[in-house]
Length: 133
Image (cartoon, rainbow, N blue to C red; front, side, top):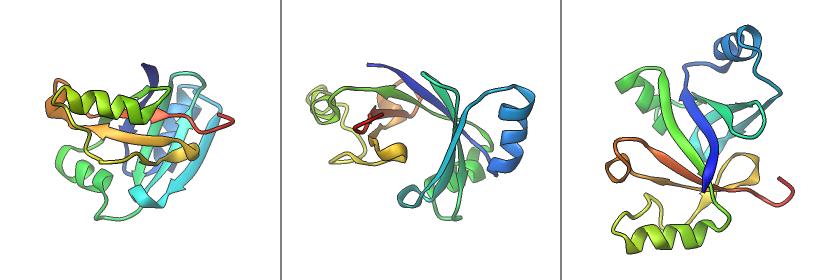
């Protein structure tokens, strides 16, 4: 496993991009909507990068996070070569991912999350890059 990205929950992408892209100079920027997660995302940088998460619906997980904790660090993503075997290994260690199977994430990647109680209070996302990534 290696660091893929650090995700930051923000109320809106436009304002956040003024800081991360314009003021701090992070780029290039890839944006897309992930309807299944009820978010718009912006990835800034290459290699390990910063992901900005903005809710598109008040009932999504990121919207609830912002309501309870405010803007800030949401999760750390670790890149894996085989997400299914990584999920199975975690289950065998008594640290089951939140999902039974990987789900579709941004950029066509497969993703799953590990509950913060299993990782020292930090939400962890496992990411298997899609073909051509």
